Length: 373
Image 1: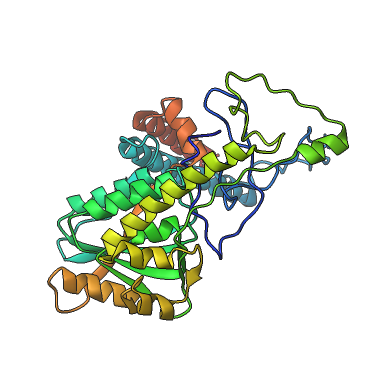
Image 2: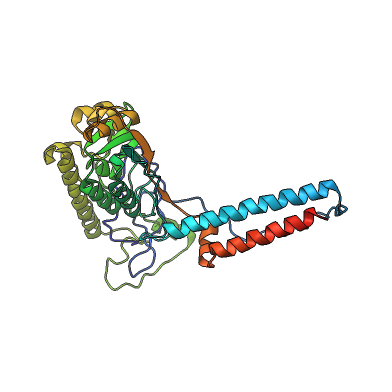
């Protein structure tokens, strides 16, 4: 498997469920166990692009005319802007390198006025370096912790869940955060996303938010019937009888099914315990709600999974109040800087500010000489 089977997804009704891709086992080929597939992407087309004859070139304009000079000036000016932008962005990329590699916190200016920092958790909880991952959320919370002007944080959550272990780590970071932290639930706040939310000081849900979905799912796909129809026969050479149990080319044995069920039950028990502690509820109360299904905002407020019906502005007001302010504070979005592949390439090639300055100088000289002709 791609990881320990414990890194299952805490699935939820309301999540987009697609067939799971085969994941890579530790020390073995790709199995079929893994994540309910709101993780994934469209298949990429294969093959070589067709060669197309270029269109005939237009005759070059006569040099020396006003139109020619204006065109040259416009192109040169555009090049100046592009090079200046690359220089600026390269500088940002160089200063943004940190413990998280090519991504880090893009801090806004601290002008001294008290604010509420807003962190958007929008998407699948997984290990992708975004705010929906442990490293990304930790980076943003650290940024909020460092900044004196940020007095509280609002997590704007719109997620149907994801990888159980990622949710576990992120919930821990929220629990350990020292400033007031409030959740504003958007369309969906389910499963692993709800585990994270449960560690906040206060949870708002809209009336129609799909919230909760406490539970765990582990998926094993058996393709052996399809392989048989296609005449495909697969032999796995393994060091243990059940090493290939999740590879998808044979059915599970009863012992293997029981083993996986035990894994799911352990992870679910931990999920229930975390929510109970975060929401100050008895474990039996949470377990009674852990049917894997979501609730509306109405029901979540009634059963204790949310504190109040409300929207983002209500969460900001609550966070401001928790920080000791009588009026809602201004907000600032906390985001991660993700350099483009071009900037990453430039950085790898050793682009420096001096090199960019030389290019700008040469371009300016070329423009000046063209205009005097």
